[in-house]
Length: 318
Image (cartoon, rainbow, N blue to C red; front, side, top):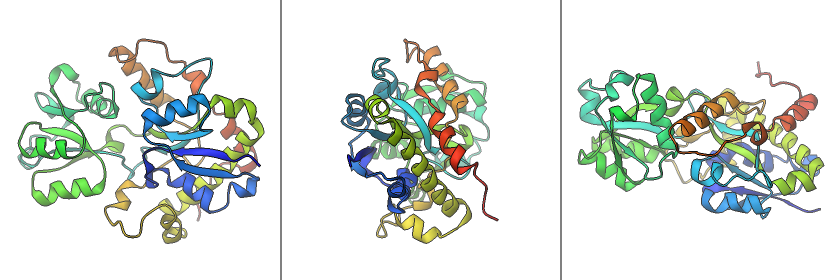
């Protein structure tokens, strides 16, 4: 049997927990599939591999530079299921601010972002641009109302906050948030699920070659994935075999905030197309995307619909 090669972007298993659970719990094997999870680098490397068919499936979120701008109608990558989205209590990033602003009551509302210095990625249109765009809109503001300061990720953001070069930025991973709190330099203002609920962070992406050459396996893959995703969801949301399930995709020696990083998702698998459309519309309005984005060709729900005809709609355990 020819294996199905699934690329894990970034090499971190926590954001792809639902897929790991489906693999480790035998959901793919029970569908008669041989699924291989492989580290595929970042989006810069993995999305082109998906376009050429060197990967059958990739677990990533659509971004400006590494998805929308290189998407091709003659070899379309399709988003077929929710592998991670911003659900209540599940955050991929937090908005963090200097402690002085938080303690001084200078960030009581979204409108208080006016005049603040925002630390942003140099890649305009990246996820932090989308996050802050939503926050600004909630306050009736635009990027014209704030000062944008280009700051790299990781240590650069820590230092920029500590020295007052920026007032706010976005940051992921609990260890980073803990570090700021312990140093007294910054704290959490909002979590991203509060600002952009339902936004897709990672999807099950199919290569054109996989869809065209192995359609029956593609359908079985989504069915197996959805069964595993529900095991994951029941464990994370309802505590069913939680310790066992979470141990499948976490490092027991890493205690740096697993809870903060557990992804949420729709247990019926549907991608929030409306949230994705809002995101694309903003990117186009701001000039980050100049070509039309045919979301009706990119988001394909037929695989999930077929799986649900067998599995039925999700019902929470009693």
